[in-house]
Image (cartoon, rainbow, N blue to C red; front, side):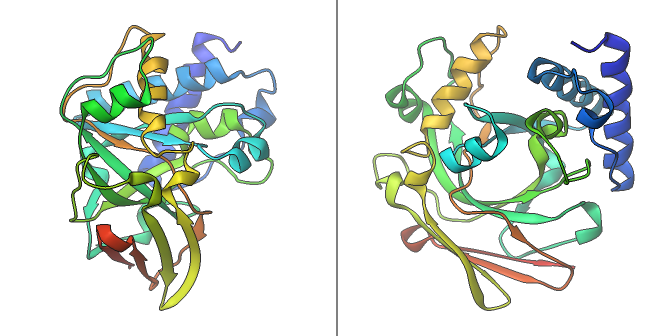
Amino acid sequence: MLSAETIAEIAAELAEADRTHSVIPRITARYPEATVEDSYAIQGMWRDSQIAAGRRLVGRKIGLTSKAMQQATGISEPDYGVMFDDTVYESGAEIPVDHFSNVRIEVELAFVLKHPLEGPDCTLDDALAAIDYAVPALEVLNSHIELEGRTIVDTISDNAAYGAMVLGTEHRRPDEIDLRWVPGVLSRNGEIEETGVAAGVLGHPATGVAWLANKFHQHGARLEAGEIILAGSFTRPMWVSRGDEVLCDYGPMGTIACRFV
């Protein structure tokens, strides 16, 4: 495992890369001995530095929720990161592309909790009972670490590649709609690029919420009421550039639009 000094140095590098919208060399190329535990320690130190600087934590993102992505990264479970208040956009927003690096879009559902959720034996039913409502969301991926050769250790260290999210306006309680069959049809500049269905996220998009509550219990923490949980993508990432207009159709849960400027 990495020393505390090395973890602090990498966290500071990532904070500077976030501030300057730049990219640093792969952590695993420089420290091949780095473990997943190290990567969460790096992320945690970066998170604490951001909170100390005045940013407000509003929720968590879950990634690697599909079998295909887990196999591609050599990891057998999802990963997670944090989301701050200044990374949340509304549908129709103009998003500055220069605020991010390696910009891509994923199609997801987000959940807002009405009750705290705590492991160690949290089930899908427990998660559904704790959820106030689901809302469609687009995740903007943001990588401050060079992509070629990147491993799960690099991704987790870099806040699980989270950059921002764009929230829709349609809210649905879990008992109002079968969330497994919410569709996503993602278009860029009027052309359909990706399609998917929410069941592609661990069989049910809220399964990851239960997984995260159980994961947090291992560290003596829980998910709190009011937190937004971004549950994982059910499409492949789509690259975007300045000038691109993005539209995603979620069927009965409406649409999300945004433009990169």
